[in-house]
Amino acid sequence: MKLELTQALPFLGKEALQAHESEVATVYNTIYNKTGAGNDFLGWVNLPSEIDESLVADIEQTAASLRRKSDLFVVVGIGGSYLGARAVIEALQNHFAPLSGDKPLVVYAGHNISEDYLSELLAILDKKDYSLAVISKSGTTTEPAIAFRILKQHIVKKYGEQEAASRIVAITDKAKGALKQLANVKGYKTYIVPDDVGGRFSVLTPVGLLPIAVAGIDIRKLIAGAVEMEKLCKNNPTLNGNPVSEYAVARHLLYQAGKTNEIMVNYEPRLVYFSEWWKQLYGESHGKEHKGIFPASVTFSTDLHSMGQYLQDGLRNLFETVISVEGSNHELRIPMEADDLDQLNYIAGKRIAEVNHQAELGTMLAHVDGGVPVLRITLPEVSALTLGQLIYFFEMACAVSGYMLEVNPFDQPGVEAYKKNMFALLGKKGYEAQTQALNKRLGRE
Ligand code: PA5
Image (cartoon, rainbow, N blue to C red; front, side, top):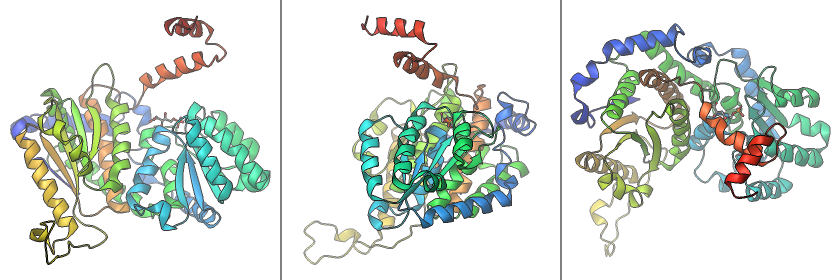
């Protein structure tokens, strides 16, 4: 992977970047010496190179056995407990996976509380062989707990207690939480989410690795990509020649210059969920103390015809980070037509990828002209290896820019506010005073 700042430098200046050289070195010290805020959640830093071979082999074995008996594999989790797996799976599977006949198809539950979504999933599961992973570090998150209760009853009814237990994997804390207790009682296969790895940094633990392996993706290549980036950072914990630091500093400077919205741009629909993963990583890590860049995403060309106008001419508080992919897995050319009624012969013979590439360059220059700085990350291809690199790249850059912003990038206290209200409105024991206050505000006295 390669990072280019050329189209952002006019907004920043090379000198401004260099001025942060010593700060970057200090931040890396803080991370590697574990002296900063949230330092008990730095387990992801050495995770790729230190992952146990026996754990990888065990995950591969479990995945192979689940693959053999499943048309569908349901990943039950929310936030960091499903987005990493989904990002990698959707980036590497066939765009039309549900229709391709490839098995098992990975589907998701527990990331919403939609009655229709769950009901329609159950109707499909009635007709398919399936297995599932229930993933929750805390083991107490309401959304996946509700989905799992429903799916657990369904799978037991379909296969009986014993076979159902062999089709369920629980990925949770080593000791704490309701899910761990339940898994012990029911005898499910379990994997542990390490104490020192937070949800949104957990894609390279069993949280991401098991579903990704069940999807038939080579998790060793994913880990190898992350190891490359881990080593790059360790060998050069500075600003110069380290794309992680350059990205972190560039976005920090842009933020200080009033560019408070970062738009992750891709030109490949297979990367939509990668952007979703990135949004969670940055939104939950940095959006604190009324600070932080708002992370958003678009997929071009699709969104050029919806958000393109705003990006070109709207409020100038944004910058873009483009993920540019050089290679495609297929070759398809625009055919020549004798009558040229659609007037496309001027591009006849060109590959679709070439047209997409020119659309990308044309858009980038137009947006720069419109006052939008563009950072560009180029991947030679979308593969398990390059995704592994990119995952570690964004994780480390998130930590570096989080510390530059002077927040704790590893907690998420703000997520609790809605939960307390939901519990109170649902009448959970212990929330009586809040229930009364909220009902009053809602005019429900
Ligand atoms: O990054 C995080 O910590 C969160 O997004 C969690 O992953 C999310 O809230 C789910 O939590 P849990 O895995 O405890 O169910």
